Amino acid sequence: MKKTLYLISVITVISIFFSGCVTKQKYMELEKKYNDCTSDKLFATNELSDCQNKSRDLDKELTTLKNKVEQLKQDTLSLTHKLQQSEQDYAKAKKDYDDLVKEIVRMNRDNSSVINELTGNLDSIKSQLDNKERELQALQVRLNEQAEELSAKEDSLNLYSANLTELQNILTQKDKEVKALKDKVSNALKSFEGSGLKVEQRNGKVYVSMDEKLLFASARWEVESQGKKAIQELAKVLESEADINVLIEGHTDNVPFTGSGQVKDNWDLSVMRATSVVKILLASGKIDPKRISASGRGEFFPLDESNTPQARAKNRRTEIILTPKLDELFQIIDAN
Image 1: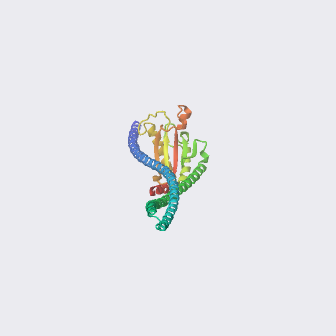
Image 2: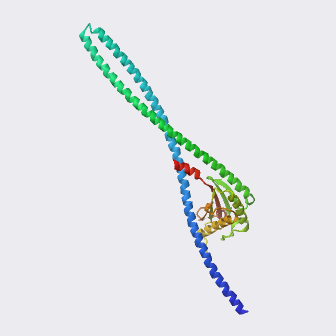
Image 3: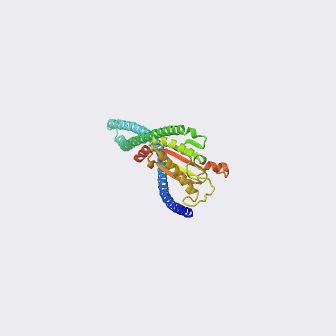
């Protein structure tokens, strides 16, 4: 009997030793996935920020172009008035010139001194006519240049207006799609609301927030049965929404977690909880793993910074963030 107990003890120790090795290997894989997901998230965040900056720059440039077009119209109107005035002055000066020629011919028989005076006046008027004609030509050149510039600016303005309208239409459509997704998720998880689950629409995304009490036991990362049911229901929705990217964020409170093995602190705990949710999603529906990212946030993004038991309970949560793809929006921005 003693030999049998001794043999069982040896086998148990060997099993625990090899089990520890397997757990460490899984941890290393999860850590690599975490680093990859963190990099992908940073890239997506930068892409979204660039899109928003480009959209604001387009709005500013559109306003500037409108102001320039209006100024060009005013300049063109002013030049047109000057051109008309110059043409009138030119016509009057030419008429005066013709009248003087006639007067000279008439007075040439009477007095040579008068003829000389009139000749001087004639030269002066002719010089004025030449100046007016040069001024008229210069105005005409400027008017043509302004007309060409106005035409180019109007073409550019029309192009930007069309692109802006297209962007606004896409954003409006995306808002409708996000609203429909939020309603679909809310209906699927309606039975879990009030049990630590909340569905919200913010910043063009759908947030499914689950309290710790719904998913995990204290200081644990294995999803409990009620939370697993909620995740499985969400997986059914995501299975039919192939254009939705999914980010799972694990959050803890600010109470330090001290552990051993693969989970040593709140960072590790938040990552493990996020990846536990990912595994259930993938096991519960036909979802492309490339659409899903897991991220551990630790205690650094609290909902309530009050250092109370209620605040800490609120901060211990897992957020599943559903984001529609913005490929069309990026293509329009890149084209401009």
